[in-house]
Length: 478
Figure (cartoon, rainbow, N blue to C red):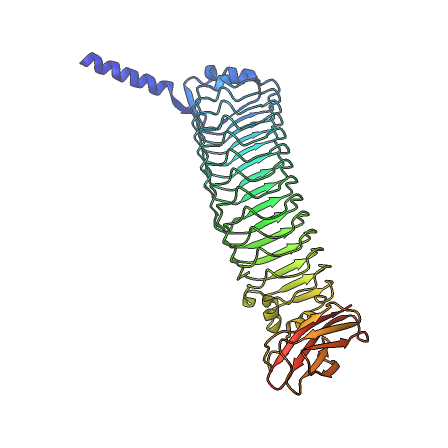
């Protein structure tokens, strides 16, 4: 028994001697010889306590000399190694307490060698590896403590290799990967501690792979910008809330916002800007609230705001500008005017219908700056919209059935139909936007023809009044 005990102690001591932390100050490798001689120069060193840098190694072709390493207590940087094709040699590495940066290794075709890496305490950055086609090798990685950046890998076609990644402690940013066609590989991701940015990926057609992402918390954002081939936001279908902003910008092939169908709330700002193929906002149909503001800017093909019908609160300001094909603000009807501080509607050259309920209510009791100009007739000034809304008339009159006026717009004469046969002492009056009476007729029939050729181009209010009611309509004179 005594001999066995002595043998056990000896083996335990040998194990400690053969596996020990070392190099708290870290180490830098810049030649193949330094890597090959590592085990000779630092015998029994399996856990480097400091940072490890493998950089500027023009003749580094493999990392086999580092095969004894099981963990790094600081950062691991593999950077500017022109001849390194793989990371074979790091196969026993299970954890990195700091950051992992793999950048500008032009011969690197895979991340094989990191197959046993489970966790990264800091950020993971993979950038500028122009021969890298996949992320195979990270298959057992489950989490990063910080951000995940994947950028400027110009032969990367998918994110296969990240299938077991379930959480990211910080931001997820995927940008400038010119051949990336899919986000497949991120299916296990359920949360990020920060925001999500997907920008300048010229071949990316949809966001499939993000299907299990349900929320972006706190004040963090989603930024989808300048993905030239993106035709769908499919992949965000299970997203219900965004703590910060949602920015959809310069995705030139995107026709709708389908894929955001379950999004209910945005804690910050919603910006939809310069998406040249976007024709409507379908996909936002369940969105009910914004914490800050709504900006819809410079979407050349946008003809309708349908999709925002259930939006009831926007937090601060409402801005609609430079949307050349937009004809109506229908879709904004349900917004509580009390949630609007400032209203900006300008340079929408086809926009003639602005008198939706939310805008009319706001103009009746404004709460801040108003800019309405350089739109089509009917919405070309604050006064025109107020007239179309009947702002200033409602206080002392009862509005019942609206009039039917045609043709409208008109250049010469109009026909006005009232819902019922007029009572005696019924008068039809046309007012300009300054509430001046221009034309007055007593009417006795449900249908009346009026010559409007003598009045100037613009927007006018038509009122039919009797002893009991006031009926109101809008006329656009061409």
